[in-house]
Length: 418
Image 1 (spheres, rainbow, N blue to C red):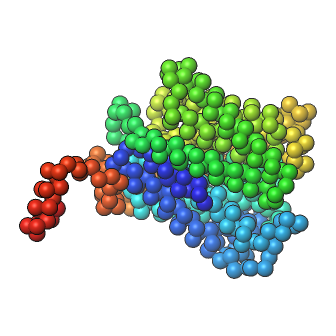
Image 2 (image 1 turned 90 degrees about the horizontal axis):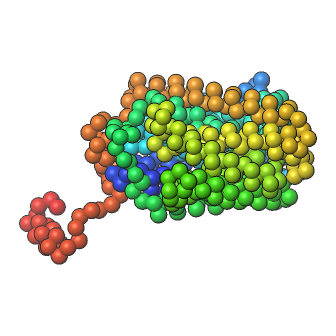
Image 3 (image 1 turned 180 degrees about the vertical axis):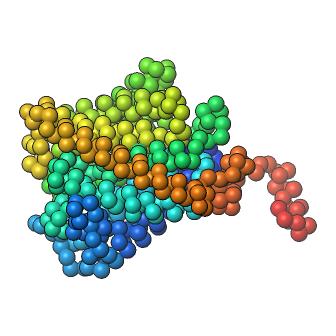
């Protein structure tokens, strides 16, 4: 859960000062919206008994069952497992806000998130996270029939958020003035703090996905650290080579890119596999950010390049560096004697997740734009969304001089509105 306010700080610092509250609120509201959707029926549809491997049922709607223990020998209460999985759903929804920074209305975004959770996240989570015989007898097709590996959400979280963010960016259009006008982060210390909270939370995200405090969790902990550290160095080295300086924004983005890349792989690769994934993610994700200016889509905070592309890197690299030596529930990739079979399965999962998430997200965004409107007016975008959408501002810029305070006191004494 700490990752969601961490993301709010990370994204909030990256936008301009006049829109920071709106940016942060779009993360915070996901805890409310997705939380209720998940408890009322989302969890049951994601992990209930499957229909053709595509969606679960509503047997666990309301999470009223306080006695069921899931996971065989691990003995995790169903409600505890449901809350753990909820946090994946919340952070994935919050990631989408980065694609529409500085131009999205608050309530239409909240409605989009509610619909998106039901029609995009829940099916994808069922496909890849619902294993046969864990919560229900029959689970999703991607995990059980295809046999794709995804330890902590390379498809349902990372590729899903990247593809959905691209759809949102296309439907809402570019920010006015982009890319001609500079739209620099207004608070880089906030960005670094947010990145640190995300990095910390990611250990629970990845290692916790082992669902037991054992060797697999320990391996996921180590590989998560290794990949993110490697990504920071490869990103900064390339940034220095191309731009002449390593930046704090680059370091924060690099850490997230490495964490994204290792997410699907952390429980299936060894330290050297994690090192390769991290180094590659730091380079490829940075190049993907630069590519958006050529392609012309305004993904404001680079959700597509970091989460979408980083997730693809991690998923496909499993086909090369996965090893059953660290987890007998996994498989061996090409470099460990497994041939191309696993790489093919990973590629199918990547393509399916991308196509499904983009298509449904695009249709939902178009529906909201056509009915209640999705984007703020031009005047609001120019002046700042915070005042128009929330009647607040993040910072009080009134001068603190003695003269200013005397004038303010005089106005109050005269009974006028300050």
